[in-house]
Each structure stands twice: as structure tokens, then as C-alpha cells.
Amino acid sequence: MLGLPWVPNQAEGNQVADRIEAERRVRAARTVPESVTGANLVRQIVASGTLHVRSHVDIDNELGLKNLREILKVREHLADLVTIQIVAFPQSGILRSPGTADLLAAAMAEGADLLGGLDPVGIDGDLDGHLDPLFAIAERRGTGIDIHLHDGGEGGLAQIEAIAQRTRAAGLQGKVAISHAFALGSVPTLLAARTADLLAETGVAIMSHGPGGATIPPLKLLREHGVRVFGGSDNIRDAWSPFGNGDMLERAMMIGYRANFRHDEELALAFDMVTKSAADVLGIEGYGIAVDGPADFVVVEAGSLAEAVAARPRRKLVIKAGRIVAKDGVLVP
Ligand SMILES: [Zn+2]
Image (cartoon, rainbow, N blue to C red; front, side, top):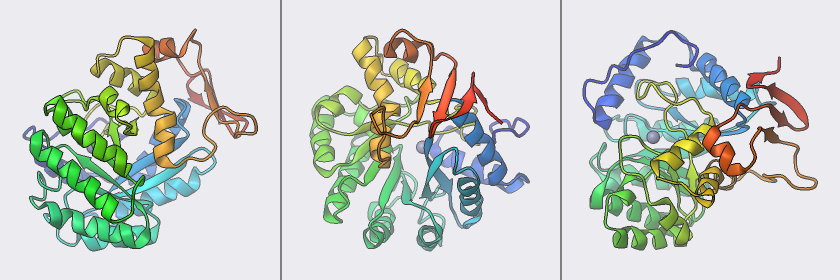
């Protein structure tokens, strides 16, 4: 809802299901298309130095593919500034929003890049019923999956393991990510470590945004076990949360704050989560500063990488393909 008049949060409870219902109401009342707010968002994040995006676009039986088509327009119009990967995201569930599985398949045919999923047990109440259509479509098309899993405890852990096992069975190693994965932070370390080995073996990546109100996965333990761990924004000014701005340097700070990182090598880990590791998961080729690499980079005033994460200085310059696209935090016209 960036660029629109402020919309107070309307969720009546504090559960994922309450937020889903509130969002459906807010969406039904909105008159400004997603292409407008989506473009506002792209301009804001490019000014903060983000040049590659994975975006989860809501698809359910009320919206159909409306939002997807709006974000496809944004992707096309702003292709000079940013690359956008689109996740066809079943925000209202798959089984509790009948017809969504077919819509997800249609979304992939219309230009979405990956399939999304959401709490197979917590929201849809049926692990196989939720995962079957996702893995069937992904296997047929050879595309990736990005599942948002809030379910915690050993029940959530069992879902993480099921997703990893299905990833292996479908030959999708390296193409699947689980976002949030709060469960990994809410079980005994021994159990988390065992699951970490399975995640590493099946190439399932874990995204964390440094959650304010839930357990955070044990980032360092996951890394030590060879799991790809990366960072994301989760909400940016939407019906779920008033917070978030798409500034990934600030996000690295939040992840570090939430994970109780204090040492430079820990801050470097948080920074890596929103840069190189995220680019790896997105499959961005030629990422990083290298001879003959693309001239894409961000300039900040900081004495070290750790200082940059801690201070989140203004982005002095954002360079895309050798061209200055933003200066002092403002997009160049
Ligand atoms: Zn999420």
C-alpha cells in the first residue's frame, strides 16, 4: 500500500488466519491497482540499492490472476531498473480457497516464475492436499517453490522435513525455499541440527526476515550444517504489517538485532544473507564485484562492512549497468 493514504491494520485477532481474512477485506475495498503501488515500491527499493527482487503475488479465488497481471506490467515497465521474479502465492490457502490450484497452474503459464505455498497444516489442515498440487506443477515445469511456513514446534518441523523429502523425490534440489521456518527456532537444537542436515542434502534454502514476534531459525547452526540461509523483507506496508520498507541493508541490521549478532563476522553473515546468498537462491548470474562483471553496485560511507550494517548509512549512489540510477537515496529522474 506504499504511496496510498495510511490504512490502519484491521486484523481482529493475532493469528495468520485473522490476517488473511483482514487482507481479503482490505483488498476488496482498494481502488488503486497493484501496478501503481508495485511501481512505487520498486522505485523506493531501487533507491535503497536493491536491483533484484523475488515478489510473492497473492492469488486466490477472489482475486484470480488480477494482481499477477498488474505485477507483470510493473516488471515490464521497470525492467531497466530491476529484475523481478514472481512467486504465484496462494495467500488464502489452496484447499480453503477452492479453485486456487488451477489458478496457480494458470499463473505459471502467464509468466510467474515460481510456486508459493503457505502453512500446509496450519492454514489448509492437510499436508499432502496442499503440497501435492504444488509439487505436481513444479515437477512438470521444472520450476522452483517458495513456501511460507509459520507453523512452529515439532509439527512445523515435520512439515519442513516433508518439503525436503518431496524436493528430493521431485528432483527439485536447489530450487526450493522455505520462508520463515519459525519451527527451526522453537525445537531442541538436536532436532534442528538433524533437520538442517536434510535441508543441506536436498538444497532447500531457508529465508528469515528477523521476525519480531516469532522464534528465529538458528542461522549460524544452519550455515554450519551447509544450509543456504538468506534474508527477505516479508511484509512491506500491507494489510499484515505496518512495517517494512524494502531497504535490505536495514533488513540485515534487523536480522542481526533479532539474532543477537554482535561481532563483525556475525554482521557479515547478516549482510551476506541479503546480498550474495539471496542472489544465489534467486539464481542471479554474475552477481558481485568482479572483473568483467556487470557494473551493478551501491556506494555507502562506512569504514567497514560491519559498520555499514550497524549504521545503515544513506545510499550515496546506486549504479545499475554502469548508470547512476539513484543518488543520496533518491531515484535519478
Ligand atoms: Zn511471509
